[in-house]
Each structure stands twice: as C-alpha cells, then as structure tokens.
Length: 188
Image (cartoon, rainbow, N blue to C red; front, side, top):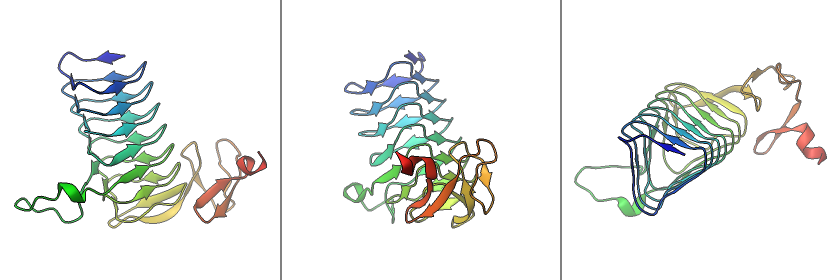
C-alpha cells in the first residue's frame, strides 16, 4: 500500500494491499477500498463508501456516501457522482442520499455525470461527458445528455457489431433482460 504524504486517510478506513493513494486525496471514515486500486490526485472517497479490488479512480473524482464500486471499475478524470436528486444550498437533504451501484468492470469516461439512485451494469461504458439519468444495462455503450445506449461493448471494452462478437477476443454474447450476457458464462 502506498499513501502519498499529502493524502489523508481518516481513522476507521480499510485500505487493501497493493493500493496506491496519490497527492491531495482524502479517504473519509468507515470507507473500504479493496486491493490493487489506484486513486489519483485530489480524489475524495467517503464516508461509508465501498470500492472493490482493482479499481482505478482518476484525478479529481469524489465518491460520496451511497456510492459502491464493484471490482474492476474505471472512473475517468473529473467524472461526477451526485448524491441527491434536488439539491438546494439552503435545504438540508443528507437524509435523501440515494445509493448508486457501479457493477463489475464498468468504465466511466472523463467528465461524465452519474445521477444518484441508479445502477450501472457490468462492463458498461459511459462515454466522456455523458449524463446518466437512468439504470444502465450490462455491456451498454452510453453517450450524450441524457445518456442513451448507442451500442454494446465486450468485457475487454471493444465495440461490437450486430453479431455481438468481441472483435478482440472472439467472445460471443446474446441479448438478455439485464443487457448482454457472455454465452460462455451460461454453460457453467
């Protein structure tokens, strides 16, 4: 574990082996960060946030109470997670924080905004600058404001054509209620 001397980790946090926390970052109380994660400069996590193993959180990202990142999530520079739907400076709404779940292998592009209360599906990709205002299916490629699905990506992050075959690995997928499903996984 590497924690830069300018970073601050509150008491009561769990930081996994092999994790790096870089310049000017702050990990607030009761936060759990998994193994082999990388948190860039000026990252704020917590309180009470869970980050899975092998996550990469780029510079200038804040993960507020209610955000959960499963294993292998990538958060691009300056992406934003909201925590209430109707914020007002003069109205206290800390009891209205809505949970946001980012499932395994998801990628969130630079400057994207994730509105709270939604789930981002496994291995989805959120394009740079997109604004997510609803749940995202597994393997969906989401772009725009508000974000809409314009295609499908494989576990390796490659855009797939209508045949739903990964051009990099040859893995085959099929449509399912939750988005796409890797056909190999169904055989196990």
